[in-house]
Image 1 (tube, protein in one colour):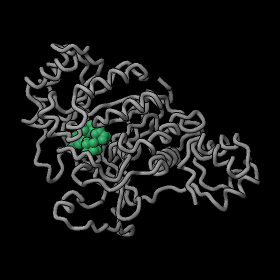
Image 2: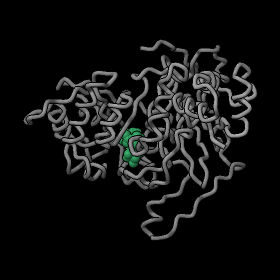
Image 3: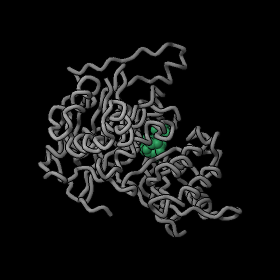
Image 4: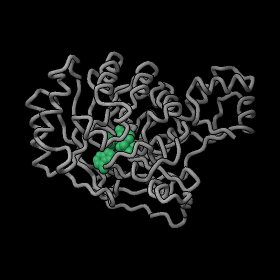
Amino acid sequence: MVNLLQFDRAGLGDLCEQLGEKRFRATQLFRWIHQRGEHDLAAMTDLAKSLRDKLAGSAVIEALPVASEQVAADGTIKWLFDVGAGDAVETVFIPEADRGTLCISSQAGCAVNCRFCATGHQGFSRNLSTAEIVAQLWHAEFELRRRLGLAPGERAITNVVMMGMGEPLQNYAALLPALRIMLDDHGYGLSRRRVTVSTSGVVPMIERLRDDCPVALAVSLHAPDDALRDELVPLNRKYPIAELLAACRSYLARAPRDFITLEYCMLDGVNDSPEQAGALLALVRGDGTAASGLACKINLIPFNPFPASGLRRSPPERVAAFAAVLQQGGIVTTVRKTRGDDIAAACGQLAGEVQDRTRVAERGVRAVPVRIERNVAKPVTRRGAGLPVARERSAS
Ligand code: SAH
Ligand code: SF4
């Protein structure tokens, strides 16, 4: 049985052809799935009966089982999805007055192993399939539409950020069709500006993304020099800062926005001094080098602690002073508001329910999968005042 959430429209077209059906039927089928949230092939009444019959024996439209759902005081919702064999991934919905943003996971765990990230600490389990990436959006969109009582055509999710668990550019083959489904006018119809891929800096794949599907790009920088970045983001040893910034500059030629977002997680006493702010400013302006600067906006993320990180969040005054250096240097700099931290849904706190594979590997013990007991999963907690309504629909 194949899950139809696996295919972008071209892929569904291929499938129709393989079944001896007309390619164009794929568009109808795609619209039923991604515009109407239909999971029952039999309910797709205007779809050729011959195609429905053929699909009935070979295909399903299957959501991911929800292991738990939590709602934070600020309306942020975190879903934990069971992806089998003891792995789980998290998806976070962040409602704001003018938009609804969904933060999606791309892998169970992550192999990059950044010092300050809960996902990194748990180690890498496996890549998600396109169906598993898309199922997070499919569930959230249609579940929220039902709850909010949205009219047909109204959307709950206006923005997607690939900032959940995992490094999306280390799962490129599955990511690309998923992005195409999000952007497709017959699917979710999100504009390229409203879909953001966040990466720790997989340079060759930044170049691929530029050529294949240039959506908005965020790069997790976290340090102004290679010595520190090597420690915080081990991938830097393979793709150092100069190469990363060069890839960013070349991405801009096709990017939907005229800047790259640089993310910088503020760690007390590690990367948050005024001197480091000055070094970051010089870096993005290209001072003292032959390279030109990088058109960017800098997003400072207060570190969200998790057990065993051994790191502390920079105090607000220090974050403000760091931001001031950048702003005075002419770089647009924002400080990310922490959302959903009461349910561990904030950046870098997503760990699913998988065990710490890194430490297991160190001990040389074979990882034993942890079973998710669906019956004892955390109940839905509702501490907020009900769901806020995200009604903004303009495609700015
Ligand atoms: N792997 C990708 C996307 C997922 S992480 C990447 O690294 O970009 C999304 C963002 O959250 C990244 O900028 C990441 O550096 C940041 N982040 C990770 N752990 C964090 C933590 N504990 N506190 C604050 N931000 C964190
Ligand atoms: Fe992976 Fe991103 Fe976490 Fe680094 S910050 S370990 S790349 S998910």
